[in-house]
View 1 (cartoon, helix red, strand yellow):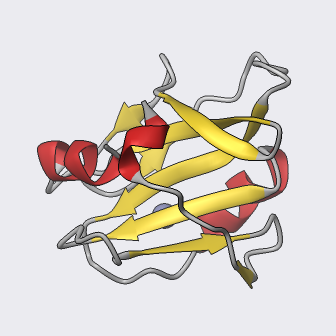
View 2 (cartoon, protein in one colour):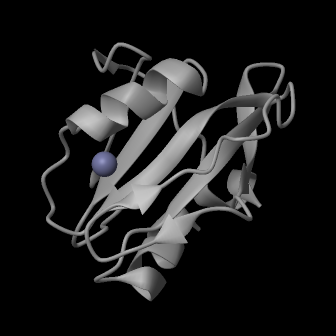
Length: 116
Ligand SMILES: [Zn+2]
């Protein structure tokens, strides 16, 4: 679903928050204040806490380079423990997870249908 959304918004970035329950991410929430520009997605965090079940974020890198930018690192530090970046061309394996410090972490993916 994230890959589909990323493809739909390409070449713009796609951005959303990850929600989890019992350590399983089950939902993505596209923020009302998310600005999708051609340079970078800006997550709107003015009114937090948004939701206590929000555990992190996901956004796409149309460049295909799956490395957090300085802006990403700043955003990560404010928005939870798990951050997913997906990269063009958005195949099933074109993603990485990072912690709030921008260090790569391993997160199991159960299957796309779990993220509805
Ligand atoms: Zn980014």
